[in-house]
Amino acid sequence: MWWIFALLSAFFAALTAIFAKIGIKGVDTDLATAIRTVVILLLAWAIAIFRGGASTINTLSKHNLIFLCLSGIATGLSWIFYFKALQLGKVSQVAPVDKMSVAIAIILAVIFLGEPLTIKSAIGALLIIGGTIVLIL
Image 1 (cartoon, rainbow, N blue to C red):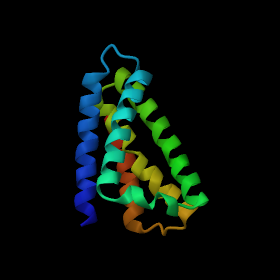
Image 2 (cartoon, one colour; image 1 turned 135 degrees about the vertical axis):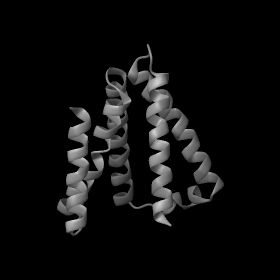
Image 3 (cartoon, rainbow, N blue to C red; image 1 turned 90 degrees about the horizontal axis):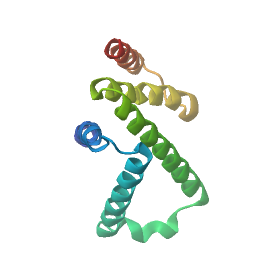
């Protein structure tokens, strides 16, 4: 079941690139990121409230909050750089480079989370990196 959500994520990420490229023409990318963030903020809170997740906010530990905030900072920085890259480059080049985050996440998961590096995941990461290099050139 997880792979269905992952495919939906990939599909909407692809739409994000297309919509963003159209939407940022002649717009400051920081402003575009701010607008996008407000929309996501409202949508995320609406979903959390509607599905009951917001009611468990008091169960979050200090550890949870620190790492969720760090994740938010990383996401914000990712979006800022992504929008700037989209404004300057082609979607067909920017999106694959952005997806190198998959290979980087595999490496970081091994280093920081102690996840095993299997032959399958190592080959997959190398193929992603190789494919990205092909698309850049």
